[in-house]
Length: 115
Length: 112
Image (cartoon, rainbow over all chains, first blue to last red; front, side, top):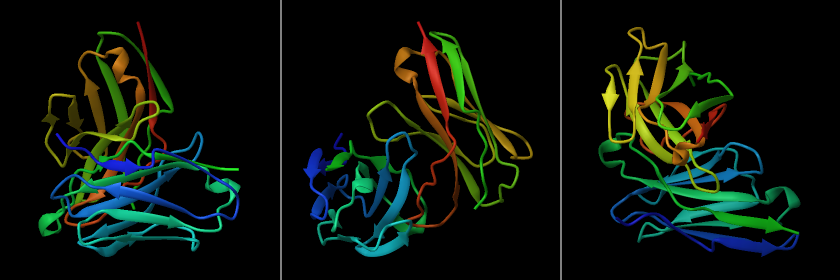
């Protein structure tokens, strides 16, 4: 079965640079979530989109922005990168038809290293 | 949001049953009890969820207390591949786009 695809899988950036992470949800899934997991920490919710509209917002820094496109893929844009942004970034997708909260399926993650 | 409490870690022997407890004394009537797990170097993975009745699927069983203030995830025969962090998470019903709040999961170690 098709899974959530994330690209790139690894990314190395310098401080103050920008990065773009991409997420391709499971076909027919309409909701995308972004989570950040720092070293030795639990995943923390950043932001979600349902039918291309922002649905929920967590502890996402102002330097980050995200959107969901017409084909339902999503991109997380990160600017002015800081050392503390080094983390695993997970994307998850779900089918939320009718507004009923459903299982989230996670991608393999993008490991971002900021030097 | 209602909070859950789990032990930090548990150990099990391979091929033996494992009971992972979760307390959620402030659960509301519209909260589903979800379990996710995260294997090393992987994204979280859905395990099971329930509302009031016990639930079984191919991965595990979920036993929910009658007052719903606690639940137990049961792995019937632990394998080395089940070594992971297990998270008990409450999710409100009928709330599209509702995030998962991960915190205080149980790290399960499985000994051969």
